[in-house]
Image 1 (cartoon, one colour):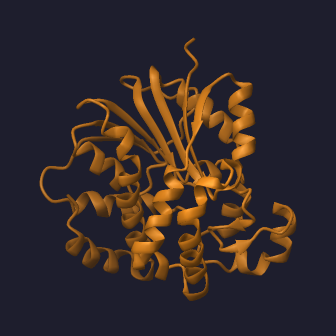
Image 2: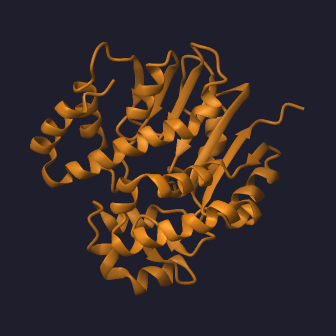
Length: 281
């Protein structure tokens, strides 16, 4: 397991004021392990999991420590330049034997070779950073077993809000940039303009249309949204790091959404949560 005390001391010396980002990524990894548990807990020990966009690698490490074989892909994309450095900090501050992970610093594409097919693949808050996420989905499923599932979780841009820069969406990506150009360019996100350009703004409707056109099996779920609602109501760290105004809005939304989310169409809930597999019929 991760030695958080040792890591905090090391990260402050290594990353300076950006150590707070590492703490956020740690919290996210621990949160999404709970979100994925309904899938991975059904898999037998030794199943092959593939994480696409593994970030600091903690989620993959935690799953590997549970007895899974894990391959983790993390190319260094715009806005995430310190991920590999943070991953080294995580692995260097691990208590006990380090779980074996096949870390790969490239994207998943047609040339990707895996030692064995994947029983379960997952991409958490990734496809919105991939300009051509449809190709990523096709390539990922090429590496799945016939029964393998690829789970995608990401923001739904049908909701008029951009979560990385915490700004409202005004009609289109182009117009939103024009209006909030200064805020985007002055963001703490590294290479913020390139980061913005790479955002693909996926929506549930567009993703559904693509999956149907490729004759893929898929199921959209409210699971991740429900986890987020419960998190907003119980995790003060999560709410506080969003700031006073937006944190209050999140908590207010969560209080009402806890009872209403089951009635909101899947196309309009804030989180896309989709399980995809090849159609073997």
